[in-house]
Image 1: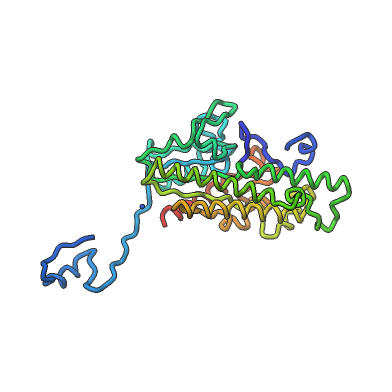
Image 2: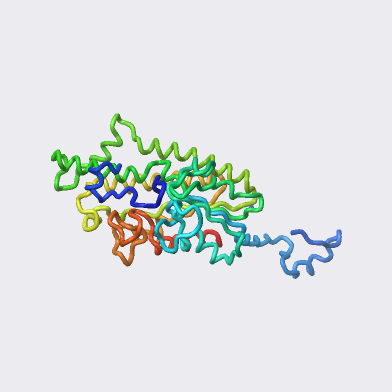
Length: 334
């Protein structure tokens, strides 16, 4: 989700030193007298008179497939990095690529135009990166498009900046002696609730309006496409306090709960907007339980602030992209 021009270290909440430096969609024939009803009832696909026909399952969409989204879709720093511009950080094993492979889409039936740092506005206009512009993502859509996945909204809500702010507030609070050892203090929550208003909820609400506009535009450009809004996987466990071995005291224990709450609000907004637009919301937070950034290296789908060598902090790793692909495929195949 980072708003960066290159998929480098973003929102490294645990890097206190860097924070100090400013990281901020049948009819049958028959005689009119109904004398053929018994025969017709035995025909394949015909229900006996008076019976309720069994609905015919809708086949899953295939191609053309277009993947839209930010860095959680793109998969920065996950080898192999593919496509242009390089600054988008797209992986050849990100979830869109794995979904396309599982659906046996041939070249020309799949386009991944996701880009690290993308906000909803970057879907409508070219997004600048250090390696040149990424064309407006929505331009990849055509009336022939039949499948669209969309993973967006986190950057609009400024979620990664919030993670960084929480780390900074904890650091400042500790210096001032405001963060006690019992972990009950929540300087970040207090920061975003100053003035009596929930600033983060306001950001999520504003992002929701933008996501709604994007979904409307997708429907206008590709009216026959089935659209899947992919939520964000859980960054933190059900008990954020269990993150202490990974995060230490970088973020106050109470503020870890605050961050988990805000991610739930973000996913809740995406679910609401998807359903209102007639799209399908794909929940990845539930399936990712136990695979958050505080899980062990062999279990986690999200890298912690101090990631495995060469990977992006607080972002999916290859196991995470593969797992999300499985959740998306389950939704697509019904």
